[in-house]
Length: 385
Ligand code: G3I
Image (cartoon, rainbow, N blue to C red):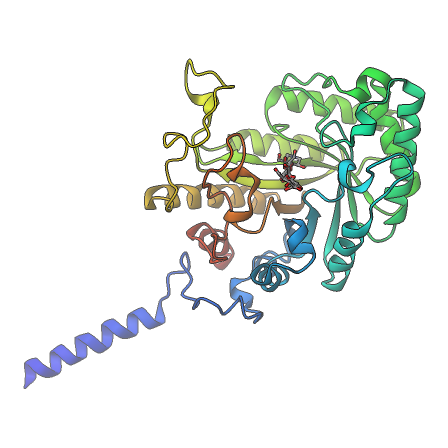
């Protein structure tokens, strides 16, 4: 009898301890709770970080149009800032001379306004994803005319609605020198200053950012700092710098990230991490002696986890995000926004770059919109405070 009582007592105590102590790193929230739209504060990134910085995501066309039902339920619960992943780029928004396509961009802005989100326009001047007519411009006057009309029309249309513009995107090489582009070639280095001046005029109340990848790396960072200093010395308004944050679970250098936050903010700029994701896959450039142009599509070596990320890597990814967010929290007074480049793993551009058709795991939500262990780690940092 005594033994029976003892056994029952042990079972009750064990069960109670499980009920009372959910592991904060792996929240025991049943599937579907967030997806049903309930505002579960203790599982919302934007709520957890509301006193620190904005938490954003990049939206694709189907999310903007509300065609993706699960995303539609999750996005407003988790994020308070949105960036247009592709639909404000030149090739979409201005397909020809005097020909603009504002359909999706208008919907994007309406979406952000409806959910009271901080709206980021991406991007006004970028060498990539230009419309064919721009690539075919042969003289500098015409290119200047394009740039002036483009910025006046696009930034002007959303003045007072878009909160922040990536005015110039990716103008630097890895060594910090200016990237050779149609803009540099035809307008000289002054094109960057002109772009910021035009944007400041067209959207006087919108924040103006310079946005680039790898600008946490020392050489490229030095180039970015020199560029920003020149703009400031010329009296041009620039409000922030966007460190894109396309990194990997091999770990970006945390020291470089910390130094970057300190150095950019010392220039009087806001710092944002604008396109955060961490690839979990090998990349062809790491293969010694391999030809980068070799076709790796369909190669099992380059797509090692088509059916799910192994636990060890899931833990590695979570630790990497935890380390990053520890730094973000430490410098929260200097950081305006952390934006993830996509909502869930299935929607990430990293499934198709640098090799098409792979299965990557770079974000905090999995392909079924479920929170990953990395989400738990990011949330748990706030529990501890
Ligand atoms: O829209 C067409 C579709 O009509 C067509 O059927 C399909 C066929 O491939 O392509 C679709 O366009 C793709 C587009 O994304 C929209 O999905 C392009 O091929 C594809 O190249 C394009 O990739 C985008 C990439 O920028 C282009 O450079 C990614 O989605 C987008 O995430 C990525 O974002 C950039 C940032 O703007 C700047 N920083 C780097 C970042 C990652 O590359």
